[in-house]
Length: 200
Image 1 (tube, rainbow, N blue to C red):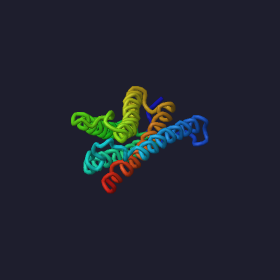
Image 2 (cartoon, rainbow, N blue to C red):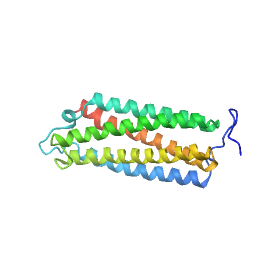
Image 3 (cartoon, rainbow, N blue to C red):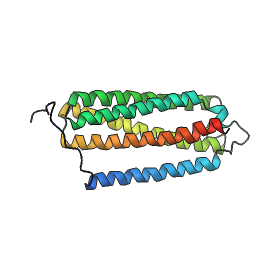
Image 4 (cartoon, helix red, strand yellow):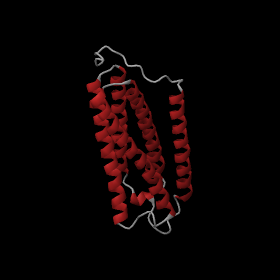
């Protein structure tokens, strides 16, 4: 079977299918997980145990850079889906590769922030505030890691087998997952970093 031409449109998963519904259910369970972590953070954010608050520990400029990188990765992921819908294999690989690089850059920055905090003695063991912070942000980072691994596997599949229906479906789910993580990060940036800077 020949590769799709420039004008070929690839059929994406039907929004009413059981698989799509099941994936939406999974995303909703993740929403519940993150909502619980946000609630925990809201309760413990003032519990610093005599240590520094977020206003002292966090760099708003650094967090904003992370945010811009992740939002840009969401944009390039969207371009990858557009290329997917049009059957442009090379463009799919290109845009998801850019998305991967941006996602990896975000993850490296997040790990660097954690390492900096731990090195200066502000680990998750110091206070309830820091425990809730590390738990919330690292859970998001774990999801980013899973998304990056998933992306590698699917790009290898596209490279070797082309845009098969199963691969197209999984790439579509991956894009939904990635956009979801961007939305979660916007809440993290707003509630943890921006609010912490405004209301120390």
